[in-house]
Image (cartoon, rainbow, N blue to C red; front, side, top):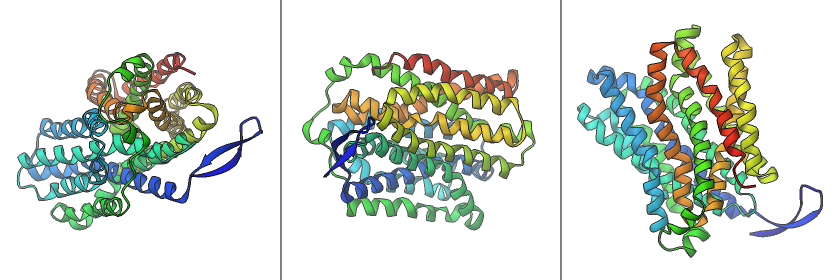
Amino acid sequence: MAIRETLTAAGTPSTGISLTRANWLALALLSCGHFAVDLYSSALGALQPLLVARFSLTLAQAGLLSGLLVFSASVAQPLYGYLSDRFPSRVFTVLAPAVAALFISVMGLAPTYRWLLPLVLLGGAGVASFHPQASAWAVAEAGERPGQAMGFFISAGALGYALGPTYFSFLVSRWGLERMHWAAIPGLAVTALLIWRPPRAGPTARSHRGFQWRPLAAVWKPLAILYTAVFLRSILQIAFGQFLPLYLHRERGFNIPAAGYVLSAFLAAGAIGGVLGGRLADRFGGRSVILFSMLVSPPFFALFFATTGWLSLVSLVLGGFILLFTIPVNVVMAQKLAPAQAGTVSALMMGFAWGMAGIVFIPLIGFAADAYSLHTALAALTFFPLIGFFLAWKLPR
């Protein structure tokens, strides 16, 4: 890494470590991998209507597919975090885009519903194996700017997740389910790039051989607070991702393409917010960014539900932009608390928190919507970030 003179927040010069071209290339390749695996992780939502029609699935069977993907791609991430900390091999990162791409893209070739289940399970495994190790290595490449690096890395995944439904819908509309296997090309290409230029093992992987429980136990309290804050934020994030198009279509009269565009705008705003949140964390500290995000985003969501028209939609996008400031911040803070288990804690703050929020709250939101309305069920969630705000006060400075 190259040494350069920088200015501190007070305006005085200081010596820092800047990112070299090699570091930026490694970070760019890891971010491309994150974009690819999350592109495939969001494919099932776009494909479900076609799969239901083709295999005459019940809603319970369709729900089982979604549940398997959430479990395999998100809830199981700590297992891969443990394995990548225990056995720091590059295969967890390098092969993951190809595994996710192949198994998700060949679902159109499945002869029966029973074949879909293992394909979804294995595709989700590719998604889960990538996140813990790759996020740890993205920070290892970052030098003095871990927040900025994690912001780029996380936002690349968020952008892939936002574009996945559009990508698969476009391909299927042109070629049909039977030729959907061509959708695997981006994931295979990214794996080829990572084989050509594999990420270097970070300092954590080189200096720590084996998994250590004692350092985790020593910081269990701030980790638990941080995880709970991430869980609360993920409730709103996953609920909007799952129910926003349905809400806009049924209760506000949007046609289905327009409702999908609004969801894409919400997710894309979150991707941009992640980049800015990482930069702000490097300058002002992660705790301050979390407090700001949890306090300022709820009023925008409340305004979205209280108004209609352009003001409502702008408020929704701004709320998502500010809420998702915290995605890279939470991961970097967890890695600083437990650097020897960077893969494990990254998985806890990313896939596991998101997956558990979905498994617990998606059914609850459905029950509440049946009992009251989808508007009431979703609007009630705007208070969860405020709970996270009070929890974040207890985070270490």
